Amino acid sequence: MERMRIKAILHRAALLGAIWIALTAPSVEGLMVGLLAVPASVWLSLRLLPARHPLVLWRLAVHLPRFVAGSVSGGIDVARRAFARDMPLNPGWVELPADLPDGGRAALGGELSLMPGTLAAGSHDGRLLVHLLDTEAGFDAAIPREERAIAAMIGTRPAGRDGRSA
Image 1 (tube, rainbow, N blue to C red):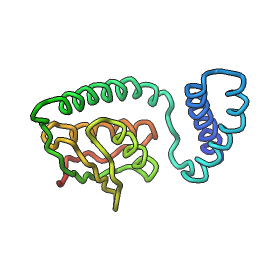
Image 2: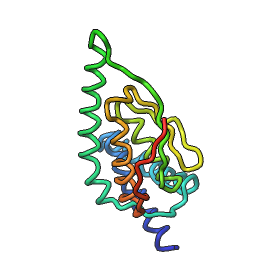
Image 3: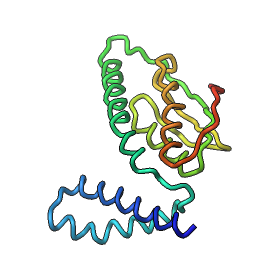
Image 4: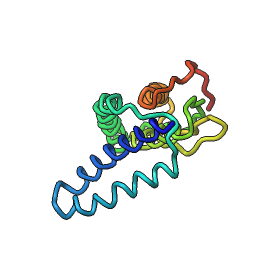
């Protein structure tokens, strides 16, 4: 257990440090503040979400280009709909089983909310409630794929299923 905690500290420090540098640019002032902010963020993240499943950083790095590409194509689709005269929308809700631990389910909800056309509104009893701009556009098909990607990043496997209810 101690080895997993050290690994979680190192992974979170690397991830949060990279985010800090990306947001502040590598300036001396930004790095000085980051020397305090990153360890405080790591401590807080471990308090709020204890290390139960280690994050596999190389899988996160492999996932990022696909996530960015999906976000861009989804953004183009949402913009196309917004500028269309008839605005082809068919909004609705889907409730999907999410076989991820609490932290993984929160990460899945956050990732889905960053993707255009979807908004994760919460989870209850292992199910994720997601609002879709267009229930006919196939946005919901991406959700199990994203769940599998997050499961791979934290080293778990979601159960294979297609059951969903609207």
